[in-house]
Each structure stands twice: as C-alpha cells, then as structure tokens.
Image 1: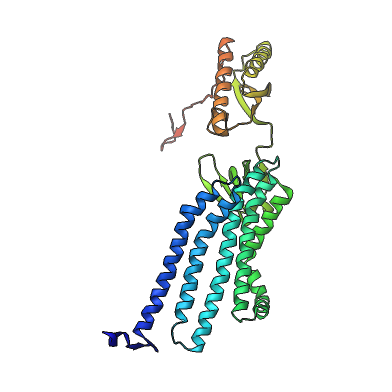
Image 2 (image 1 turned 180 degrees about the horizontal axis):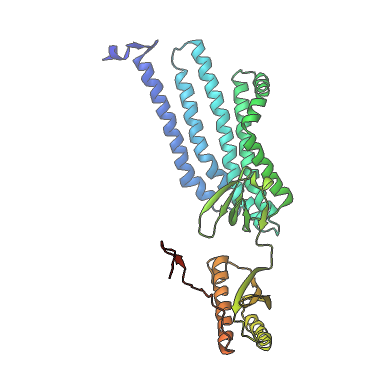
Length: 369
C-alpha cells in the first residue's frame, strides 16, 4: 500500500500530490471557519456599537478573507512539490496578480458599502439634483480606475514593462479612436447633460422621437421610461445632436378644442356662449386658465376654439400619468361645451354631402341617367 503512494507522477510522488491537495482543502476549511466565526460572533459584537462603519467593514471583508486564505493555501501547498523553476515563477506571478486583484475587489466592496449607506443618503438630503446624477457616474468611474490600476500593478509585479504596453496602446490609439467614435460621442453627450442640465432625473422629456421620464443618467447612456412602462436605453450622443424638449419645466399643458357651430347662430348668441364657456371651463379644478374665442368665420360654420391650460400632472394625483390626466380633462371640457350649446339651443355644423346624377352618353349618342 505504501508503495502505491510512492508512485511518481510529474516529478512528485502520489503522496506528495495528496498532501498538497489536503493543504488546499485545509486552508479552504480554515477560511470557512473564519467566515463562520465572523458571522456568528464578530458581527454580534459590532452590532452593539453605535456606529455602522464596523458592521460595513466586517461584512465587506468576509468573502475576500476566505479567498485570501484559499490563495495562500494553494501557493504554499504547491511549494511542497518538486516543480521546475520556470513553473515556480509562473505560479508566483499568478499568485501576485491574484493578490492584486483581490485587494482591488476588497476596495470596491468597501466603497460600494459606504456608497449605499452614506453617500446615497447624503445626496438625498441636498436640494440640487446634480449630485444625484453625478454619484452613479462617480461610482462607475472609481470602479474602472481601481480595476485599471490593479491590472497595471499586477502586470508590473509580474515583470512586464507597463510603459512599453502603454506605448503600444498609443500606437494603436488612432485605430481605437476610429473604432470608438460612438463611445466618444456618447461620453460628450453625457458631459453636455451634466454641464447644461437640460433636465434632471424624473423629468419628462421628448428627444429623438422618444418621450418618457428620465430614470437614470449614465456616462454613456440614459434610461428613459415611457408612460406605458417601457424602458428605453438612449445613447447620450442624441443629447448633443437632437433637440431636447423638457416637458416638465412648463407650469401647465396647453390644450385646444374646436367646435364648428351652425352658420345660423347670431353674433349675440356667439358672444353669450363665449362668456358662458369661459365661466364653465374655469370652474374645472385641473385648469389654470381658459380663453374661448371665435377662431374662424368659415364658409359653412363658425369655429369656436377653447384654449386652456391644464395643471401639471403630479404622482400623488388620481391619474396614472400625464396622458391620463389630459384625456380626462379633455373629456370634461368637451362635455361642458356640449352642455352649454344644448342649453343655448345652438346647433353644431354637420358635414354635408351632395349627390348628383351622373350623365352618361350611350352608344347611339343619347344621354342616359
């Protein structure tokens, strides 16, 4: 039986391979025990303190510690084996690179915790919306920076000439720039949004044929939600090339209704109707102002137009969205106008179609109807 473990595989006995494997398993178990102790005891202690910082730190470093202990176990278990110098250098390089990425992961986790618990709550207390829009971009930018630095440091520790790598990237910069024109355009579009601030999160906008509410503004794209619940991801470049209509900066929605009344209506009747229409429409609680006018003296009708402004929709109102509110108010105005016309015995002008017999000539030259 002992001879079986003395069998050599790739320069090491089977027993040495098993010892290395057991060391890896042992270090993994140690990591799990540390994780369990942290969850069971350390967290119970930190929960009794008045600050949440220690709770956040413990919660964020648990998983990286398990990975760290496992990496150390793998590294030192392989050190018990007889392997070539080249392979040892490769293992050391991979280990150092992994440790660098592990530190970057830990930093990102710590920042995410503080971002959620402190930074988000802090900007919610401010009156301006600019910091609310910049915070997600700062989060993404910081993660990108940490990961990029970790990769560069890892490559440098691995013995690679980072300067030469960056120089090589500089040579291919033109090709990259040509291939990433849309990306650059999106970035500039995002910068335009943050500098000029044509809208803020929650505003209803219309741009490039898309109408909806801004839910999130990113560095490359922005999320728009339509009144039907559809979520559209808009590339930021449209904000630099298309006209942007911020529909929520107005104090009311302009609306107009036109009624074609009969030509037999007298001028006195029209004047009385205009006065009554204004008084009636102004009583609507959702209308800011109204102005009924005799808009057109047509060949077949007099056209009365009611211009009015509807108060802006608010989420707490009993309407699903602004279109719902506009539809309800439009119906109320039309019903009120028809009621006024009915009470004043004013008829609406109806379209008239004239039919005439067509004269046709027969084969013998006579006309037939």
